[in-house]
Length: 538
Image 1 (cartoon, rainbow, N blue to C red):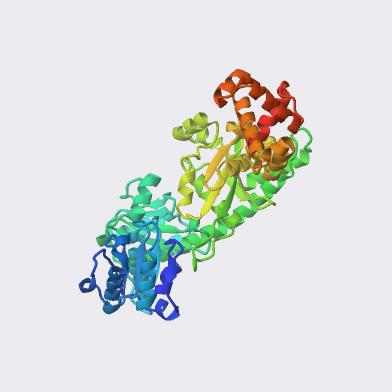
Image 2: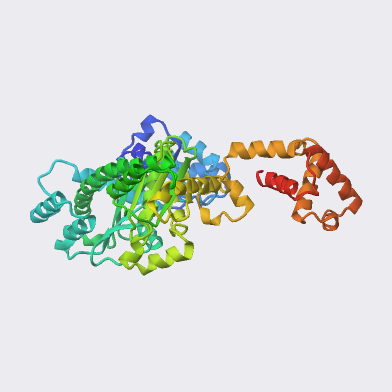
């Protein structure tokens, strides 16, 4: 493994601050984590050094940094990986020192655990060893044959994992997603909540091996062995190879399923009206729902999702397309739901990810937890799941919108625009924060306006408030503030004057000026509502 290979591991989110081609080509022999001022005696040639920089303060100056980096160069360190958490950013003095001594400098963001870097290095080295030509396998011959037969029979991941480790007494082992969802676990492994699973991925003991895919970060799995002494690393890699083959087949099947889901969504996007849809159109919709594994009858709920990927650090791997990321995140969220309700997830013609989810399966399956959640929220309980989706994609903002339940298949075309409207509202209210909202929460004028497209909001704002929006004119800013206060106090002259510390006559004068500039009569309720709505659009 070379220094440059670390930068290709997108899950670590590392950022190269200095390093040329020659330095990045250095081979890594191991990892040492230290915060000593002079770690020379603990280093070996070829190691990368992890440091939280707690040994340095801005008052120490350049000399202390130079001594530290010189020690790394003397010991033959391959690179320095410096944590940003202590100082908020990597000091320029350290960048200059590494450039001077020819040591590659890589920034480690606060959300990346040092343990994850150590595991990535050593597991990559074990993987390199396991890929060398050899007649020796860590898995016994009979186990490899059994796993091969199970793969051909399309066995699930839980069966493969249990049988792969059965000859070792079935030690505790989990197969997890990056959001903390348990894909599979051995019979001896405890059930984990998503929060517990995420801790498992970063715990200092045990082994966590990432099973990469060519898809998105949401499709990668992590093979977590609780006790590192329970199985040799090479055996774990061979098990990971088996699970990777299983996952490849699963992804191919899901691609075909998503094609069928796209057809359902395209039909809903045509917005067939329940009263005007022909019998043939209704039959076509029900047939396509059946093809996706959904019941012909409701209730259903529709969810729409979108993703915005923010600029990546220099030399970071390119992010997946926003549509693919939103779809993968949406599917992962739905798989977190208790009872695993059937759903059809795909992409609408405009590129928005969406899914139709059955709400009927909970009662028929006797899933009390899910029934309670549905009754409590009036639909799918995704609010606690949505924040987990930011873990695999820290530079991505994910928004989602949920429709009201659709009682029949014929009501689904009406549920789709509801979900889209709620999605637009989530984007408006939380443009830089992942957020989920639902149509059921559209109970105020502000919530209603949040779903209006931004260009429409901007046009309404400009045409309604007009001259009051001139920020360069102090008098106009004063009038705008007066209008806000007046409407906030339900049009009461006395309370507005009191809030603004003005005489009532002054408030009367300003309101008349506002009426003159906007062409509205603030004695009329409809005109008050117009101006209030415009203020809500800012």
